[in-house]
Length: 212
Image (tube, rainbow, N blue to C red; front, side):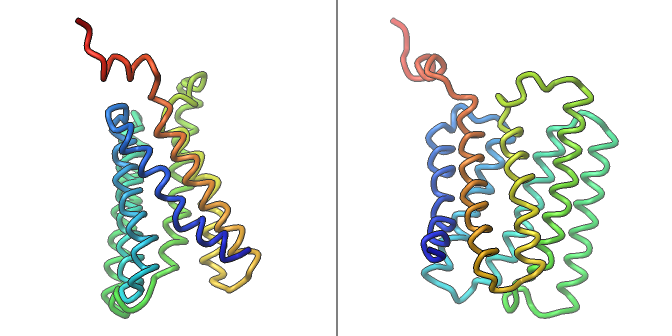
């Protein structure tokens, strides 16, 4: 059962990737940034299954990509200067700490820095909570489910705490690993929903059928 869940966790990333590419014309700016992250996540998940030699390097690079893409999406989603300043400050602090830490330890292609995954998760949850708080304060919550960022942020709000536990404990606990695999699948399913919310039959007809 654990092997099945792990396989699903690895290959489910292809669902949002294919969906996002198929509906590319309907994706707004943040959704396209997320699609770029999903494309990199697909490579990160699947490539090591066949060529495990460079796994630490690939995983460590994904941490940087994840932080950059989420920072950019959340920065673009905010209209409050203070929130934007907080996001930029957290990003620069993370990058500075990452560079300092890596320069004084093993090369990034020798060890997977799982502790930075935990830090990334904490920062993501903090910024996502700022996103929801800003929407609540601005009273723009009636049709929030029609915005891709709502689904992306909700997905990370559910996924990040589980991932934090998984890598903070960094154990071979079978139940924790299985639960993490389930949350990984849920993450990709919710991101897939985010890629579809701007799509409609009417819009697709206008896009692909030209009137005579």
